[in-house]
Every structure is written in structure tokens, then in C-alpha cells.
Image 1 (cartoon, rainbow, N blue to C red):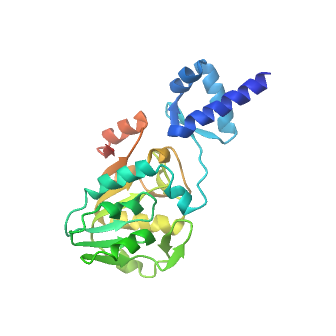
Image 2: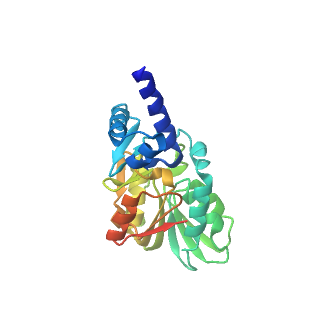
Image 3: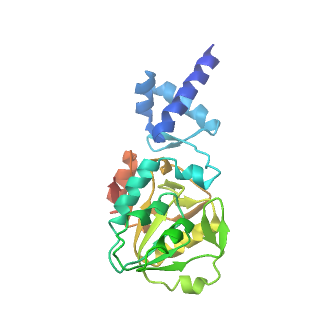
Length: 254
């Protein structure tokens, strides 16, 4: 009987986490009217089952990356759309900007002022298809080989040229962000391109929806301190707000 009750509680906790990705232990205790000791025991069991991970004062759901780009693109679409709209306001006339291959950054071009004279650097095939439709926008394409899972171009042949570019702004997406591991990506070539363009930019912006907090992929391509501003939507863990404030990193919640 106790095992059945535990299994039911575990399922409810996972469902509770699925909406906003993370909760404090106090949130869970109050939601299910159970003691903090019970919460800690249940969370430890879920951790051992590799369903959740603990972080400072709370817990987050371990999510498996969607297998297709299109399935990721529609996930949290409204948040991504708001993030892209705000990010577009940061672009100024005559900017040279980098936009990477992400489901959030892919929407950015839709909201940039078409009267601006801009140079885009990108490995994002969706950005490429939109930029070529605007006469006063120039384009530098990064990469020569299509990676279907991310709709990105990889296999850069001229790194010397890429690393000589002087960019005004870089708009970067991530599959996961933690304070310890920074911004991460599962693919080495995508991660290397992101890292290089951040280093070549006067200003760098990280764009992520709320489900990306406390998620980690294989490769770290940047630390939080590498970004001038983090742009997100929805709920942000208080621990992140405090960390970003203490380290003078701007946070914009749209």
C-alpha cells in the first residue's frame, strides 16, 4: 500500500514540475500537504530514478531533448515569441549581428525593422531564408553542412575569417542553463560556433524560455558572465535572480 502511495505521489510531483520545470521544496510540500521530510525523501528517490535533479532550495525535471527541430519549435511557442520580439528591439540600424541556430533565435528576424541596413552572420537556415528577402540586409553564412536535428549549418572551413569578424551583437540560444555549468549545447560544432561569436561580439544576449533553467547538455559554450543580458519569459528561480544581480548580469523577463 505504501509503495502504491509513493508511486502516486512521485507521479504527481513529476506532473507538477512539468508545467514550470522547477519548484522549491516548500512549494511541493504545500501543494501536496506533506511534510518537508517526506518531500526530501520523495525527491531523493526521484533523483535516484533520474527523473529530477536537485538545485539550491529546489528541484527541476530532467527533460529529454525532443528528437526533431519542429517539435522543439512549437514547444513554449508563446514564450519564445515574446523573447524574440523584445530581442529585436535591441537591434540598431547598421548593426553587424550574429544569430545562432535555435528555436527562439529563429523568430528574431521576423520582428527586426526592415528599414534598417544590417549585416547578418548566421548558421541558422531559417534566418538565412528570411534575410535574403530583404534588399538592404546583407548576409554572411557560417558553415557548409546541414545538421538536420538543429536546422543549423556546421563544418566551418575558414575559422580564421570567422574569428576576425567584429560584431556589434550576438543573439544566442541554449538547450540548458545552470549556474555551475553555464550555457550548454549537445553538439560540439554548434557549441564552438556560439562560443566564437560571443567572443567576437561587443554585446551578447542569451535567449531562453523558462524550461531551460536547471537543464544541462553535453558541452558548455559560455558562462553566465559572458552575457550582457539574459532574456527569458515565465518564472525564473529566485536563486538565479540573486546570482545575476550579484554578478551585474542584466535579466529581462518579458
